[in-house]
Image (cartoon, rainbow over all chains, first blue to last red; front, side):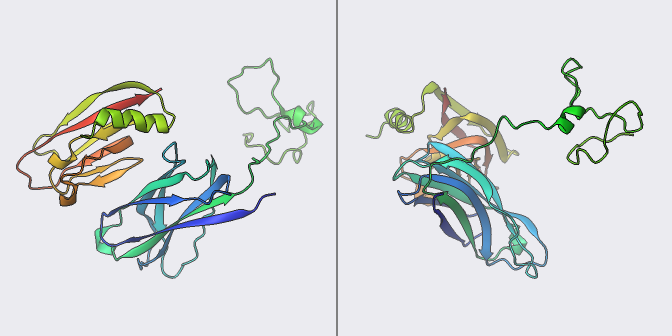
Amino acid sequence: MGVTRYNIIQLKVDRPGQIIKFQHKVPTYLKRCTGFKTVHVRGIGTDLYIPEIGWFTASFNSLKEEAIVAPVSAQAFFQPEETHEFQTLDVHLLQGQLVVGVYLDTCPSNLFTPYFVNLYLRCTDSNETKQVKSNNPVTPIEQKVQPDANEDETEDCSCPNPMDADDEYEEESNPDQLCSII
Amino acid sequence: MFDHLVHIHQQFKQRELSIQLQRFKTLVTKSATLRYEIEAYNEYLLLTNAALLPIGTRIISDTNSLEVTTTLNGLEGLEEFSGLVAIELPTGIDNYPIIEFIQIVKE
């Protein structure tokens, strides 16, 4: 397990429609960026949630990899907690290269007051990527509800009828199934 | 003298991108239309005549944004746009410009 470090890029927006360019150098010991988050820190006071006050775009490794295009929202003043999780990113960082980007303000002009926005980059010094098991063992119960390989391949959801006495279907057997029986 | 094409080739070589096509692309603007959109997905548009555009013109794309200001006069740099490129002209202009880009299609 590597260590995780958060890089913060903070920008101040002074006027409506402002375009702010930024560049940032990620410390060389960090090898990968695994997530990002855009946050309105302070400035715009609103009774209502505003889903978009601006857009971040950013590229990694000195313009080699365009990885982020994301809006920034403003929370209502009585709900200041930012609830959004980090969004997933998987960028291998080349040493000493730049993160380059632009912030574009799109806040409605009647709500605009100068404000601060942050772009958080979650990076790690580990090169390991999460291992995704591609050959999960299939349990006997799951095998029962899988469609026959010889059936029409366009059918993506096949469930046996629990009312059918000949079938050994168990209703609680697969709680993850997405299809329902009418 | 700054050579745009040499600069572009150096830039793309540094970024390890191969160029499949490079050509000029122009957008002729007309009165009564203040907003234009160009689709430049998987390609790049490099603005060559920013200094000739009306003050207040905005070019907004998925990767870069630009507002033409008086400070742009005399600068030779090329602004690069990609994705959906929206061009917004300011109201009340007399001369509608021809906007010129160098279009780069990558491999």
